[in-house]
Length: 167
Ligand code: FES
Ligand code: FES
Image (cartoon, rainbow, N blue to C red; front, side, top):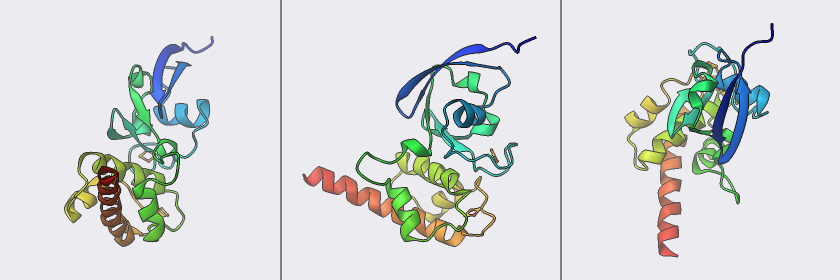
């Protein structure tokens, strides 16, 4: 018997999607397999590593622990949706400038966690930054530069805001 599927309407990176998904299907698999948004990484698939972090209604969540049906009527943002049309998000720019990754596999999740932090607080303390990425494991041990990237991202974000206000 074909598995039962349920209708889900979800906004992903500003675009509405009408999907039919199995109730057991995770948001992570839906993003990667149905929507071909493969920037969100699948590593442990059990809530241990943070590589699959995305935003649901602005909150950072593990997409491997979120069912696709739970996102019906909600807004999802993935790593593909963070950059403005004309460049990089401050967090992305800071990761490059601070050399905050080696293999890069954990990086989309780290960036999404820091983006969620900076969306609500563009002057975070080191504790705020470390807490924001505390659910994101990096096997390469890039943590020191990830903290530096978090600090620089906040500086870049504030500078961009100030230059927009001055225009
Ligand atoms: S893949 Fe989701 S927490 Fe590791
Ligand atoms: S950069 Fe390699 S796991 Fe984080």
